[in-house]
Amino acid sequence: MTPDEFRRYGYQAIDWIAGYLANPERYPVFPSVKPGQLTDSLPARGPERGEPMEAILADFERLIVPAMTHWNHPGFLAYFANSAPAEGILGELLAAALNGNGMLWKTAPAVTELEQVTLRWLRQWSGLPEDWFGLIYDTASVASMHAIAAAREAADPQSRTRGAAPGLVVYTSEQAHSSIEKGAIAVGIGQENVRKIPTDAAFRMLPEALEAAIGRDLASGLRPCCVSATVGTTSTTSVDPVPLIADICERHGLWLHVDAAYAGSAALLPEFRWAFAGCERADSFVTNPHKWLLTPMDCSVFYTRRPEILRRAFSLVPEYLQTSDDSRAVNLMDYGVALGRRFRALKLWFVLRSYGREGLAAVLREHVRLAQELAAEVDAHPQFERTAPSPFSVVCFRYRGTDDENRRILECVNASGEVFLSGTVLHGRFTLHLAVGNLGTTRAHVQKAWERVQSAAGGPG
Ligand SMILES: Cc1ncc(COP(=O)(O)O)c(C=O)c1O
Picture (cartoon, rainbow, N blue to C red):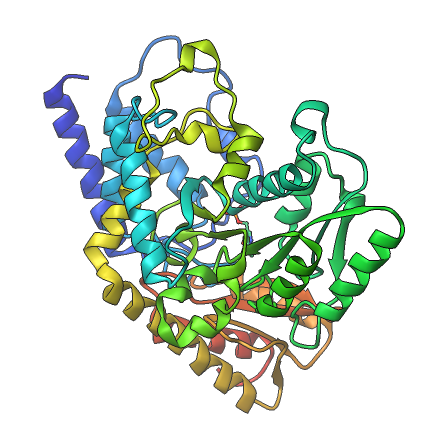
């Protein structure tokens, strides 16, 4: 492609993005495609000869876009809704142009240093300890896997050379994200050695049950090594009692990881600092700007106060990657499995600079306000009940009927294409989960969802 052609198609692509961002609601939030439909509409074999960009862009619009669930749609209220605002998209576009690979400082100084700078800003805005070391992974699942690997390294320094010793145990709550269990699988600790600690009525880990489980394992000769607490669990956004869990970890010398993948963004708001009490005592902490901090997929921020352990677990430098030592030249490949790393900090920098702390805080506050308003309406409705406290921007609620009725309500609401909710099971009962997290979501979208839920249940609305 010549520079002139790039300009032409580039402007065309930007025009398309601008139109999409201006009116994402022209597409149903949830597509009506069937599994395999897109595959069947595309050639079974790749083209022998290059095709014209007109044809590729036309097929993007004709085939790809209609097969998308539109996360950037303001009616997206499922899971943890997220946003890719224009500022973040520009950062991502420019990162692709630079095509930097930040494996070593010298292979991309800006990739390495901007990551350190943006993560310092975020740490300061979030009230997290100044001396924490931060780096960006793709997802919280991968970040937590690295936390568990570091915990294993701290408990069993030989694991790196001879594999994981049998008997290491990881603790998390029964409400924790499945990534903690997957992390234990990945580093060879094994699923059977993950204890899912019971939670209280508000879905928070019971510290006395954690203490008892550790005691039982010690008595049977096992080796507890890591506790993963959650600030903002996936189903209900409950907050584990981190200060009490930190006490237990300190008493037993265990690595404390905090998974704040969604709720970590709320640390920017002084009124939510209560949720992060005790996190300053953690060994590691993960938060995903790609969930609630207006950063396009993917960007997961990982902090640790013990980077030397993470480095001990993963640093392996072959001849062809040797580089001269300089205390200011961080080589990020030393802190994880991946050698190559994308320039994820660029889009984060664009977002942090263009919104500023106050701008981001205003968006988060509005999301919380919308969720709290819905929570109050659900509480006031005789045929609905809230199924969990709603500390942040997620509301879990259900029709006071059977699970099947609630599942039908969800299907019916999502079939509208106007809004998209998800479901979960709490205390054995199916429940609706509505998350406000998209930049474009307004009161009208939340009200539309609530009205559709009520009418699907056969009530007013
Ligand atoms: C608490 C929590 N941790 C981890 C994850 C996994 O996030 P990722 O998709 O970045 O791996 C999620 C996803 O929703 C989550 O809610």
